[in-house]
Image 1: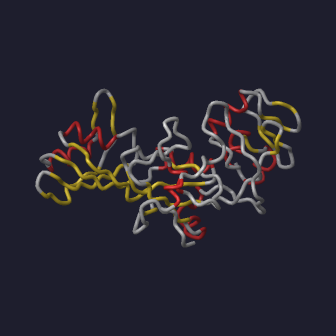
Image 2 (image 1 turned 180 degrees about the horizontal axis):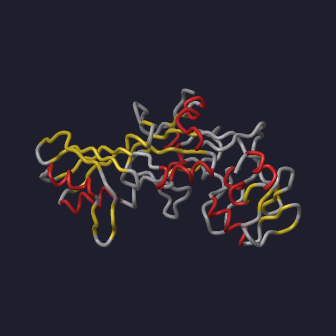
Image 3 (image 1 turned 30 degrees about the vertical axis):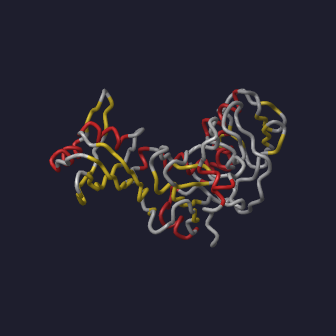
Length: 285
């Protein structure tokens, strides 16, 4: 669809809500199903509605925030921190250590509790969805320390894909980097990234993972970013790396108002900062 067609036919309501940074598309569809979204005062019954420029969208009676300029950040997620907005058990989450001045952001993909390294954050739900799709095909690289005797032929066999416990995994590039005693450092590179994929593949090969660090997500690198710190990707680099994946940018932006979330889902705003996490904030711009 061209830009002129998009302006005439409008944008699907769930996509518009996600672009505004309120929630993901799926969560936006839930908001519609709950009867909490209205266009020009008419409550929506289906997420198939397109919204044209100038129409008034509200969630729970409050005006939808204007779509902001798309932004992306690199976070060095520490081990033992959850990639979620809130934890019923009160454990630390990635949001606890973010600077107060950051807007509402969403993680691109996930890193589990015991994994660490590069986690991308964005204020644009549409971009989040694009970068998470397997069709995007971005290579994700990991440094993995394992306990056990490593057979390089077994690692090479992962390049053909593998089925473990009924789950099919696509081709994975794996190599042995170094060995000290019974511990070895490996490098894994994959494009799909199913739930706990590397851990399950290593377990299948007889290795026990005791450290897993994501060092790259597509063209974005962890580099020397310190643990717990967050740094914004400059807009110029964002445009260069994303190209046509970058959503059309608004001409003007304004500070978003209160954000709505589906009932019984994670809250719209970030949880209160944990005092211990503040000591890890990045103080330089």
